[in-house]
Length: 100
Image (cartoon, rainbow, N blue to C red; front, top):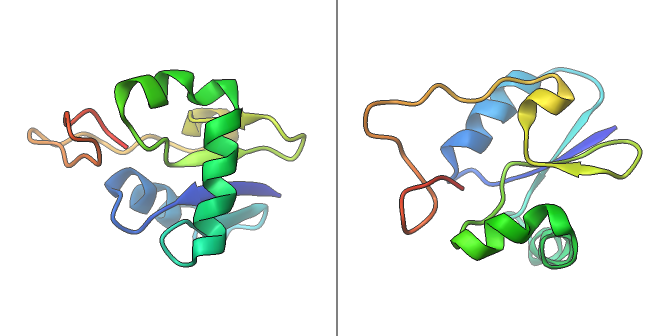
């Protein structure tokens, strides 16, 4: 099962959630739903080296994918999904407008 850390306020996460709706093999963990989900994600984000550029750039790091073998990626293509198509004025979760 691939765990996907996401949040409803993130347009990239909404795109991913739509792609896996009804598909087996994926579990969505909404980090805005409970403090337990948020704490679980923050522990992963604060300790995994995959997130170093994310932390440096002031981004959140979602959607985040934890594969069955425990490896973490921020690339939807690595778990068989597509990136959200960018609009001329992209919605973004970071202060700099660079994405979530």
